Length: 296
Image (tube, rainbow, N blue to C red; front, side):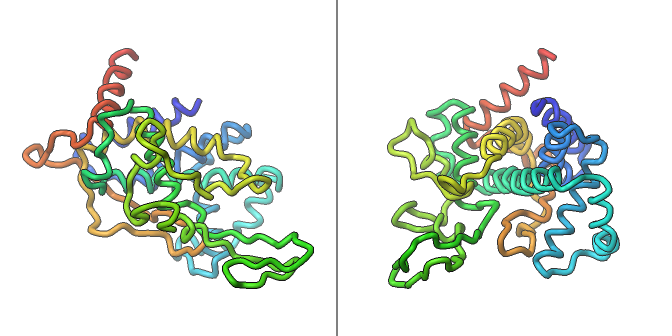
């Protein structure tokens, strides 16, 4: 099911690039795949996926105290009633959580690969295409974790000492996940995008991240999110090897707790500007996709 959803959106991106039209990877790929998958899993009409994604994005801006666009603000006025009529509470939570974080993960991974230097792609020829994409997903979860902060309450009977700071029993602690993922003691060269650090076949892999929480606070959707991202990127990355970026700088969403791109427009490179694949990892994916298309 996930493969079918990804295939439809990948074909759309490919058709737009081949026609010479710019395409926003966030709106037309990263946001569509997880919301359609979530709708199908929950038995909701997938035709309403785009509307649901707009509602969820608008409510996040409102919850953060930021002003949505005028268009979103207009919808936001009646959004609570609309969602209540459409979904009861038991469906709203899994869709919101599963959609937003996964879409941000997919978009951020594509962005990082498109802007990666040779150092980041150095080991792609030494591993399978599948392992390379898996490493890209894990490194993206570290460097651009979709969830940047979380709150935990101290369950200790006595006060805790964390880094010289006393934390009373029952106190709330704001955990900065994004900062933890850039701890040089845990991740050498923490500001660099280096998927090779996540490869089990190359040296000692980095420790697991906190992107999906830990222990009893582990995210229930961890396996679905990873699976969607891996399948989506295996199909998308080969297309982006021949694409160029329109914006000089990425447009990130103006949120503190959520890290994600607002948009990422790409366009096919002119023939004279095309280059040979910089990485055998992407090249393997491209050939695998070509074989799949021929066999359909």
